Amino acid sequence: MSKTLNRLALMTMMAGVVAFGITAVDARPGSGKSSGSRGSQTNVAPPSTSTAPGTAQPMQRSVTPAGPAAAAAPAAGAAAGAAGAAAAAAKPSMARSLMMGLGAGLLGAGLFGLLSGAGFLSGLGSLAGMLGFLLQIALIGGVIFLIVRLIRGRRETAMAAPAAGMARDAQASQNPTQRQMMGGLMGGAAQPAQPAIQPLDLTGDDFGAFEKLLVDVQTAYGAENVPALRAMLTPEMSAYFEGDLSDNEARGAVNKIANVKLLQGDLSEAWREAGGEYATVAMRYAISDALVDRRTGRTIEGDLAKVGEVTEVWTFVREPNTAQAGWKLSAIQQVA
Image (cartoon, rainbow, N blue to C red; front, side):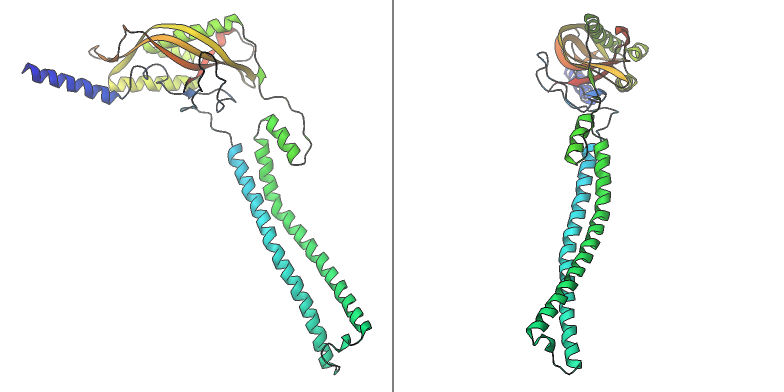
């Protein structure tokens, strides 16, 4: 009987772990995902550092979509290609029309000779008649060529207009440096533009604020202190964290966190852009992390007595020219 109960307990524990589907490492704030936004740099990998020499993973959860430039460029190319193909298809047709016009002229001259009683092509009997006829054909051919050239030019201009409009739309969606390059390639004057982002100088107080946020965010998450999290996170990150906490609650679990301490950190990049100042920092930190049954207190996964290490890339944001206390967590990225 005792063995049967032990087996049932073991099977229940294993089923619980499978049902939760997450490890202690993945249960920390952010659920082990790359989440959030980094302003205009959201879809650009931050530079690697000595703390995080690998590449930061792309965002798996973000309210910032990929830029439309990548979609607009193929569309503009397709429209331009269609216009070119239509123009190329029109050339053989125009050539055939010209040859048919010349043939019709010769046939008309021959029929006129027959009807007048002089014979088919009788007007070509003398050298002077031959030269005169050729001169007339050349003049007629020249007039036809000019008319065809004019019609073809108008047609190509009309077909190229949509492609040019799409190219301008794609150009408008590029950053200033790309717009300047595209302007030169498309024959337009390269207009000087202010950079979209500018370097941002940080102080020791800023780095102290980042370290404090690392500890405070982890502690508030382990205590399920939602008001405290909202004060330290952007609305986007707060929504992700609250969603993760709700998932844990639905499973009957709680993520306990302790012993958080920054071991090593260095700056990846810092910049200022319209609407905010950003700093991306690679951080290697110690943490004790465990999933605990909310009702019984039984440890489901992990061990609070065991200290592990995690390396992540955190991005912070604040309103321009505000105090260090204005920094908030806007993104967490895992390192590949």
